[in-house]
Length: 88
Figure (tube, rainbow, N blue to C red):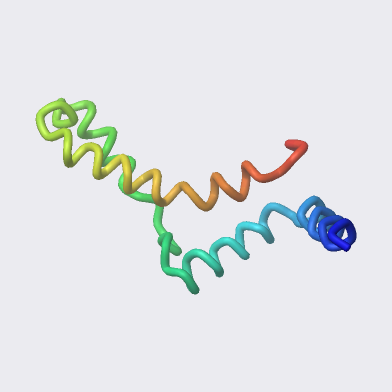
């Protein structure tokens, strides 16, 4: 009873291309649930500039907020690309 639905889910998961999984993740988590940003990549240049100027140590709250923003933007692409097994 449980074996056949799990086989179908596993087969669909293994045969799904990464770009299609990425689109589905964007639709569900960005459009419907509004948990992640749909566009943008965070301000990585600002994080690097804060490290270079020493502001990362002077204002650690701002630095951690900027790093968290970049990681928040990278969550869905990392999840889509990291879900492929075996890696290609």
